[in-house]
Length: 285
Image (cartoon, rainbow, N blue to C red):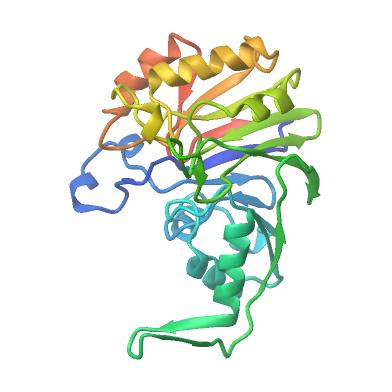
């Protein structure tokens, strides 16, 4: 693998991330989890929230090097538009943001208006915002800087019983040189069309949702995996020719209230060839 490129997991928690909370202060570092953010060197972030600026500082990443931001979906632990606008304002260049229709429509609303809590009204924003936005289309690949990205439909953000999508949550196949990454946060069992689109694509790295760990969950009401469901999804990917013994598999988006301590969990999953994520983990490409 190339020594010059890597992806670093800056935040690996789920919606109940505990980083900075009093109850987490004395936990081992690998049990202190931020909301999801990832840095694909040299200039791309995937997902952004209020933990992201501090994580960049903690892990020694110069914010001025960030050119591109890829957003998976509009949930608060992955997407905070006002934080993105503040971050973009600090950059010497416009931040190029890519996301689904809900994400981009929201960013553009925040670009044009501000909410006044005193009056209870929206008002026109007076200052300019330092970002450029692009709506992604499922199945339509594009180049983002030096990487090639194909957005795919994640099994998330939907009422499954009534087949109503709150938004079109995105997973990504990312090509970096001769390496291919799957970014599967957030998602439950993969959508049939997504599996079909990925068939035969060998993955060097698969970053997978393992939110609930050992907890028994009902797939009908969750857009996430537990360990059993993750194993089943990995079997689907093996059957599709996507993963093999050479693929680095990472379990990510871990619920602090459900997965338990990192070290025993990591040892158990390592026996299955799965790496358990923690904040700061570097994955070479």
